[in-house]
Amino acid sequence: MPNGKPGDHPLTDILVHGFTVFGSELDGLIREIDDLGGSADLAREVNLLDYDPRLGGEAADRAQLRERLISLRNRLRAD
Figure 1 (cartoon, rainbow, N blue to C red):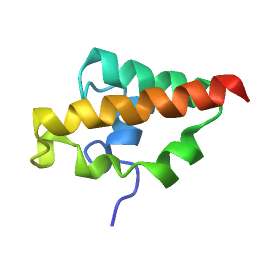
Figure 2: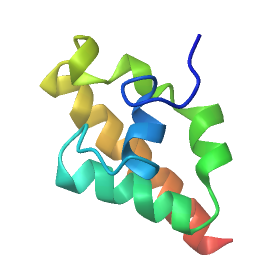
Figure 3: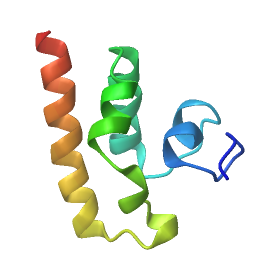
């Protein structure tokens, strides 16, 4: 069961442990979403485990993840 240790979940790896998971651009978008107060929205709307390259996520999947993150970030900026 995940408990916040490194490797448990990409979100905590990026936000808490400072790891690079998806690359600087995507990790930066995730940090920006968190800074905008949207980490709960992110966790609810995007299953980052599906995109995690350490778990078999493909580069094409990361393109889709990028679009989803940008959409969420833009929505949070507009609120």
